[in-house]
Amino acid sequence: MENIGVAVAKKDMSAARRGAALKREKKLAASVARAAGLARAAAERLAEDEDDDDYTTAARYRAVSEETALIDRQISAARRALGLDVDEPNPIAICLMIESLTAQMRIRLSEKGFW
Image (cartoon, rainbow, N blue to C red):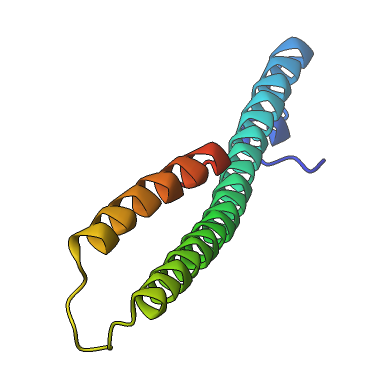
């Protein structure tokens, strides 16, 4: 470790004072290094959290998309079974089915931790 202070270099100081000055400088250097390490560790944790957030956001988006596609397939199957055209509005039974399927989707997503 190099001497970073001028106080240690003075020749007119007693040995005890030079030792105390050197000890203060080492303590200061250690606290600066510790603070730099803490800052670096915090930056690394933040970067990891951002990566985790990206992953969980993508996973949530993917899960919601899969559930929505499942509901859309069930609705289109029900419309085909009733013989409805694309431009016709949904009857009350299908509207109720959509509400129940959406509620079930929310339950499944909340069990997975995405809702």
